[in-house]
Image (tube, rainbow, N blue to C red; front, side, top):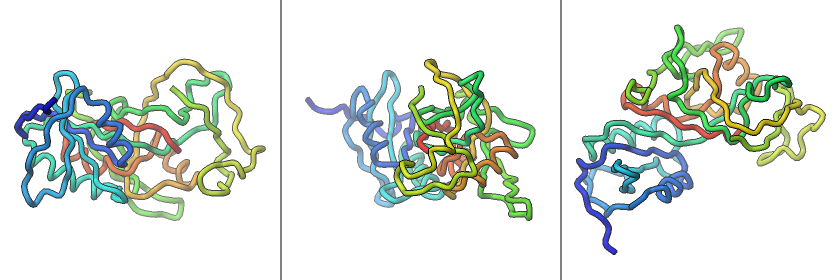
Length: 248
């Protein structure tokens, strides 16, 4: 069976992923995949075209080993030139949670691994427009003052897995898991069985947050829920929302 062939102008939704495995997942979610189209010789992107329901979608990712705000902005700049009728984008990726000490009376107050955070739910405040650009600011004696923020999501767009949460003062041992970490430093939690919605800010920048102390510093200053590394390069210039799965 031959694939449907449309013009570039038929595509109105973009799906930006940050890892190849996420691109593969987005491809599997298409109801129908479309035939590839020729692009400008100056366009380095490789697109996956298809549809979900009534929406024609173009999927793209920066390439293996290319992460951060600059590669994301680069691929989107070429994409909107190739498909001029894109109305909005979805940036699907993973992020680092900024947990607080668990509330033993209400398990829905803490964010856990496997939670999906939608930037659409992130509420602007007097100090931030929906997302904090955490590595743009200046360092002070008391820590980093992240004084830059980016746009809220566009107006027309306005579960949980078991995991271990260690006290922020605990140093991580090993690389891929916490099997060697101090089990006596685990925070106590209670089970929950239904999804919950969290309201707050997402932080985006090029730095990977691997320090619990630095994470908590930024969390407490701005009520940040999680950190990710691509959206800040897009959202000021391209109408999009971020759907971030908590992975760390």
